[in-house]
Image 1 (cartoon, one colour):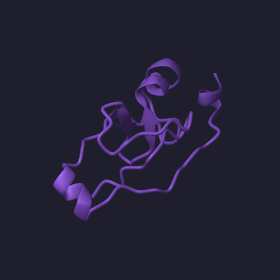
Image 2 (cartoon, rainbow, N blue to C red):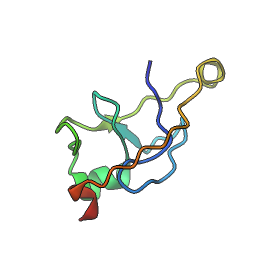
Image 3 (cartoon, one colour):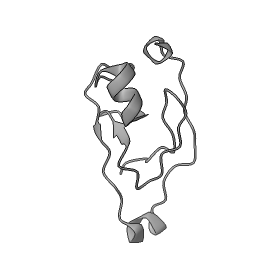
Length: 81
């Protein structure tokens, strides 16, 4: 099950569980669409994998299986650009 992290690892922007702007790689590194497009060029700075739109968990399932509240921010060289 996806963790649904609450923020962009690059700029720390809030990303709600139903955000259409959340992007993830196969390891669930999480970024916002703006950072992916402008800074990361579609590639995860952690693993080099493709960053794709994160699926939205339906509200009923979200009540039973809530999103993570643990924020992750990593000072990647690509994010500083």
